[in-house]
Length: 268
Length: 292
Image (cartoon, rainbow over all chains, first blue to last red; front, side):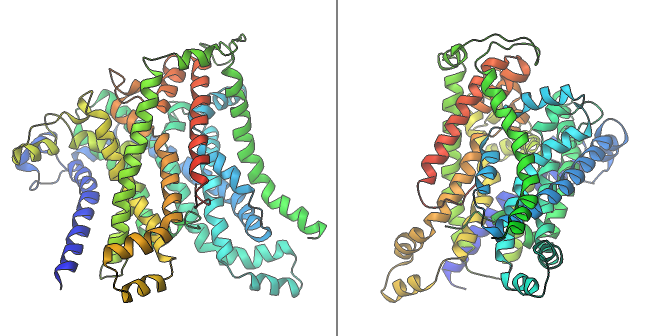
């Protein structure tokens, strides 16, 4: 290998270590005792313990928060897909790019300016603290997200297949259902994984709109900081539990996730 | 287009548009309305008309509003600029296929899919002033200890560094996608003409990549302006005891939910939204209009 490619390999290695070591540190700390976490002698060599996981999973709010996150994530993603996938097809096929501006507005507006009006509205409807409110607020992020990913996906599909199907007598809606939808399944899966992760990681909406019984995982994790700031082991176990499910799903679909993340953002 | 097609179009697009529209239009109008009242305390309390007083109060507040405004600017411009440079360098390094490139791209998505609150507590541990690994490493190589997030002057730079850690990969991924769409002929021609690697990058690749770069920078700018989870998780309400990490978003949150100053908070949010829209409009006049 030439000196140049060694240099390149070295630079890439350093960048990767910087990116991944903190997360490795979090997971490793979750398997340490509080003494080991702060003791330089035990940083690299230690006997892993499941005590932290046992503590955070056996008592307190973490298990129920996981369930809440799962309920809200799955429901909001599924409902968002039902709304956004047909809409994305309509945009892609009928060239309705004005819709893009709505996605843009939803992305630009600071979420805090939505929370008080939402709270007011949902309080009138007696819904504050329910799963439904969290699902609706997370859908506000997911619908534009899925719409955006799917518009570029549908635009990438060959239109000839749909035209041929229409000549064979399929209605436009039939074309969507029988031709476009099956072809779009990989894209829909990608968009749904991204939407689920954004819901799973979302902090602010649940911080305000959830109550004790509907708190999601990030909010519960945050409450660990405030009253148990020095229980690093428990905190890292909780952070690991918050991070790993979403990350595992994403890493399994790694190639598609990168495609989804870049969808629509690179057209000059 | 036939009538049936037109109906179908609205049938398929309508529900999604109606949902996002309903979730956003009422809040925006309501926030604008609140910003002209004296609403305080309960959300549905009787509020009187206050004219432009909230705006005058916000813009005349040199203790929290203006410092928060400048912190937002410094945080966003600083973090995004570093992310753009490092992301571009990383994208150029990863541009040519090599053994293990799939692994590398997998690692890239780890920070950006980790929950921001988890990232906050993770860095609280690593950067802990007394027991954190960062300080042990610093002292091991003979450098002085740092308080990082524990100090008033160090908090904002530390938060910017964490933002750079988390979002440089996103920048690199977006730029890699941009690079993959570029034609290779201009570069090959420049190579034949004897241009050095730097000259090829500076005069051939960079101009062609500019739309993708602008798009990526715009995307990151809009999100960085609104950074909330990380600051709130590490510095708490008000961005610390001396408001040292309070950005406009954190200030608006605090005014709303900690002080119930709904009217003043709404004015701050309207001003903040105007700033974001202004940034988007200015950047979008340049190439790369598909972003965000």
